[in-house]
Image (cartoon, rainbow, N blue to C red; front, side, top):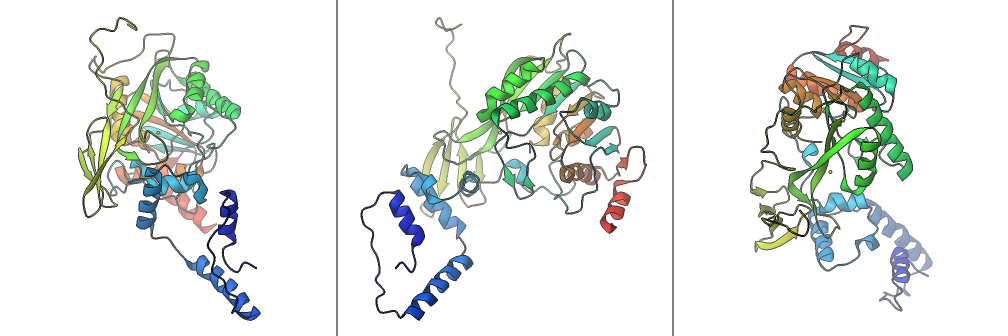
Length: 404
């Protein structure tokens, strides 16, 4: 009879171990055995993790090439545990700062079909794949530029809950992207530039959908993040790709000169002290991590490679920061231009447009995040959004729906 250790027995069988050490409890009475089973389960139920210690142990196992899949953690749990710091979207910014994002609230104000008027901007709670919804959002205005950050189809779940349309079968996901890009294409003027942030793991689906919708794919930018995300990859992810192109039919808009490159550097510090006490030092293609009381140093290869190109080659002639979005819009859209974001998320495109005197047209399917976008703009500007066709302010409608 096994009193405690059923999980360890299953693990031993999975590892095909011939024997394991045991502690014999022959001296216990049947009553004591039952009590120990209950107590052991209750202790496990009440137990928690020392996350710093757990992280160090996981990193040690990873360094020894141990298969972390055997430990029972999901990919998302391992990603959070092995991440040196939260992504930029989750770093706290003070209210009033461009990158500050309010928390989603339990009571939704927005409903499907609602269009909010925020000064020169419009935000709609609706479906980015619907031609009718996108047309209603834009209200007959031709779009001069599109910046968007669609779901990556990685089944991401954060503290605010799951991202909608983020866990599809491959064919369905590609059709979803084609429908969304086609809807955006339908309201854009000829020559209007488009930027699409995405994950490399779904890069093929994004590129095919981009061109299938009718856009010219001119290139792919690489946004270099300030921190690597330590996971189980051989090369640690430290970048996100951004497709760049335009709607064909006319010369595309460009205001950025000829000094820009496809690598968009984050203007962060070269030496950063992280929340877990480690120090990360950017040395180009690698990040040096300094940790522990003895200041142990180790390097981690990242997904961005910096390597000098030969002078002549005879053989072959991943919430985005507001400043990142604004810098790309500066290259592709004049002041007063209409900018479409079919996947509004937390509203960074809206804030970038507010700061640069452009007109945002933002779609968001999830009422929670539609509310977040509106509240973020209100907190940033000190002004109130109103409901189109109704005139009531966001605050008044919040009071009505909270009381319902």
